[in-house]
Image (cartoon, rainbow, N blue to C red; front, top):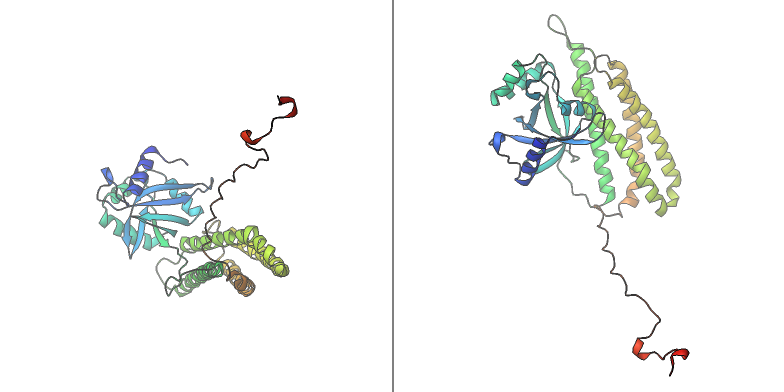
Length: 329
């Protein structure tokens, strides 16, 4: 999807002025949201108004009150990992649409801050989505840690993957506890899994796939040239990648339609993923951290190319050469 000339001008002004934009956006809270195309896979940046709630930015799929959700909303349903720019800050986030009573609560909060969203909702029969943009950094809970080696970078990624998996499992168990606790009158919890579990699990699966694909294509081949003694370990790690990928495919198939997904089967597959992935990450760290601790991170920039050497010639300067035999007087 191409960016409209108007949006492109807003994006350029935003980035040139530290997040400040004039005209119709003068004095308003504006962010740039970069999503990955649901079908194209291409990245698209969209300027959006936002409202904060509990420190997190909320964006609304108003589409100016039109009958259809905006394209960026369909994109984030397919690829929950997005990039957010606010002011001069840019960070990765996971986009999680709110549902049910929580959506209504957040939308009321948005309308109190920006009443125009209420007009957009009144203009359409669709329920305007409210999306929470959760920061998705790799920092551990106790705070950021300086990474100076490739071993540290690997641990950082593994820590994030473990944390995301624990988060999805905790949300799943909370979902089951809510279903089990429901008694008497009132609306029971909806069947299926819900968007919150779906978005977090999808973001985790897509990050895991990218990590393993990068290792298979780049990290392992590069290391194998320096550490031939690790060949059997690389073979085992690649086979474990395939095992984890099969479980991941099962989870993604269950997430295809969250309204009909079997929660019990999802919980079983998630527990299997947790066992397999935890064992895999533990083994990978045991094998790879020692050699990777010798590799600096971030990598040093490539050295500047040496200036070209002067041309080499075996000919003497013209003034010092004797004339050829047929040129002598």
